Length: 155
Length: 383
Image (cartoon, rainbow over all chains, first blue to last red; front, side):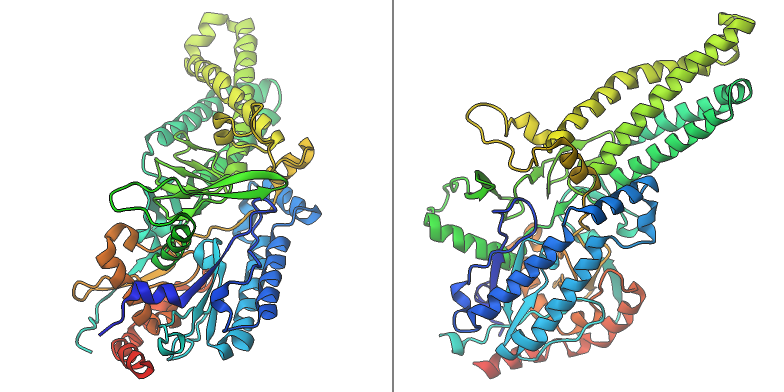
C-alpha cells in the first residue's frame, strides 16, 4: 500500500524561496527554515545558500565582459550562440557541480537532498529527504532523487 | 515484470507542457498558437525585399553603387535573424509549480491568512517585498500556482507566466519577455532601417529612371515599385513609431506592460526601482546584459509507459513541468507516485541538456524492471 504522496511530499520537502529585496536578480532567502532545525546546522545551510547566491550574482553580473559578449553576439546576429556557450550557462554548470559536491559531502550524510533551482524554474531551492534506496548516479550535471518520507523519526 | 511494457515511446517534455504554445522541430522551436499574423509578417518582409532585389537593385547597383544591394542584404538578413529568434525562442516562461511546491506555498498562505470556507473565493494573494526602498507587491498566480516574480505577468493568450513580460506580439507570433526582448527590439530597429532604406531607394530609383524614360513608363516597367512604396509607407508609420516607443522604454528600463498599467507613473505610485537612473546603463542592461537560459527543459525526455491507466510523468532534469496540474488531482497523485517509483530508473536516464539524447532509451529499458519492488518494501521497512 502506497502512502499518501501529497501528504508525504509536504513533509518531505522544504522550499527556500527567492529573495527579491535586491530586484529581479536570482537570490534565495538565507533565513533558516524551522523544518530543518534538527536536520542540519544553521551555519552549513546559510553557507550553501550564500554560495549559491554568489554564483547567481556572478552569472547575472552586468559588467565589461557581459557587455562584450552581448555586443559580439549582436554583431553576429546571435549566430555565435550556436557554437559558444553563454557566460550564464557556464556558471550554471559550475552551480550544478557545486550542488552535487554539497550533496555528497554535507547533505547525503544527513539524509537530505538539495535540488538544483534550475529544475524548479529558478523559483526555489528545495531540501528533500533522501530515499532509503539511496542516491542514483546520473549522467550529466544534475543529480536527482526524490525520496520517500521516513515517518517514525518525525512523529 | 509483465506490467512493464517493452514498447517505450520516447516522449519529450515539450509534449506535456501546459500552456497554449505550439512546438516545432521536436521542441526546439516555441511559439504561440495563433501564427497567422506571423506568416503575414514573413510574407511582407520577404515579398518586399524580393521585389526590391529583383528590380530596383539591379538598376541602382549599376547606376549608383553595388554597395546598395549589399547593405540591403545585410539589413535584411539581420532583420530576419532577429525576427526568427524572437518568434522561436522561449520568452522566459516560468514553469508551473509542481504539486509539492504548490502545496507548500498553499500551506504558507493558509498559515498567514487562515483557511477560507469552501465555496468562497480566497482573497487575492499578495506578498509585499521591498526592492531598493520601494514596496513591490508579488501576486499569486492561480493558474501557475506560484508567486510571480516582480515584473512577471501571466499571458492569457499563451497561458503562461512570463518573466519581465512586455507584451504578446501577434506579428512575431510569440510573447515578448525577458529572454527575447532584445531580439524583438533589434528586429523592429533593423526593420525600421530596412523600411526606410527600401523606401528611400525606391524613390531614388523612380527619380533616376523617370529622368530617362518618364514617370509613367517607369511605373509600367516595374509595377512592383508601387507596391513596395505603399508597403514601406504604412510600415514606416507603425514600425518606426514602435521602435521609438521601445527605445523610450529601454532607456527607462520599463516594460510595455508596466507602461500600460502605469505602474511607475502617477503621483501615488512608486518610482521604477529597476531603473539605474542612467540611460546608457539602462540600455546596456536591457540590450547587452547577460542572457538567462531557458528553464523550460523542452527537449528533455519524459518516460511514458504504455501500460495500464498510469501515465507516469517522471521528473528529470531542469525546468520540469508537472502535467497533473491539468490532469486533475487523481492523476496528480499517481504522477506523484510515479515520481517516487520512477526515481530509480529515471535518474539513470536523466539528461542534462547537453548530453546526447540517444543514450537514454537504452537506459530506460534496462531499469524499469526494478520499478515496483523497492518502494513498498522500503516504505514498510521504515515503518
